[in-house]
Image (cartoon, rainbow, N blue to C red; front, side, top):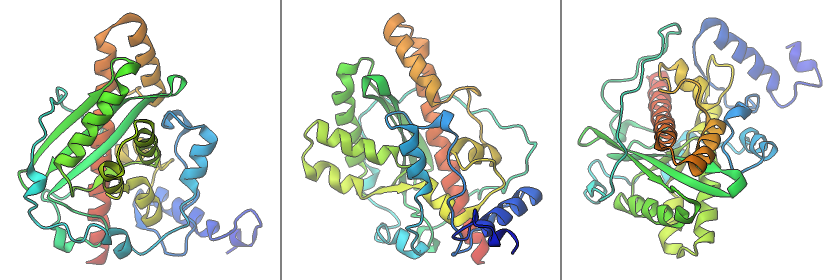
Length: 312
């Protein structure tokens, strides 16, 4: 109540600060109250997605006041059947070699993910589909180049996971990997596409315009995008220092195989690759991108399970 009287704490921010402190003190997540501001935390700028300015990025992350009900958020996917025959088509694209993720040090207890996925019919928070796609981009801003589209295909029906890395080994290949990426999206024509923050949406639109992609090939795909960062910040309070992907996923027990890697490091690696031709650099970038996709998957499943558990 005292904080709320201060002019610096407007539009429910005082409540958010107190709830965040409580979550941190107890090392426990809480459901965010409908009237809270959800604007306190922004991503660590060292992990800002390349291709947009830091200032624009912070503005985008904090502009989450356009909240709607959880039911409304999922309605666009409510017609996804339990078993979608069309979505089981397997794209003929070579996957990047998958290696195991290291377990995070068990220093911070985290809620345990359910061993089995929640049936779609029971979900009212986030779409639970037979097949789900988790999408992350790597870019080189000085070249205005989006050189890697990573997609983790999670097939809940067959209990499989497959990562696809569409990599441009030179700037001239950007258009080719864009077409390959779209081909994969249409191999699963009704699968929701989960991503973290809005860089993927902005880039998707930019590439569609840049390569004169017919509207019927990209606009239906765009409607399937679901921003997990927006969902987390609007619906949950977590004991993390930042609502960026890494702090959240690490609190949940996930860690990146290259502990010091980040988006900025990948830019340096790609520039070095263009100069040296060292394929180890490309492998490191793809490995980092895959881990980003898998981290998004972990956060999405946790949030769905957490919200469902609070309603039971």
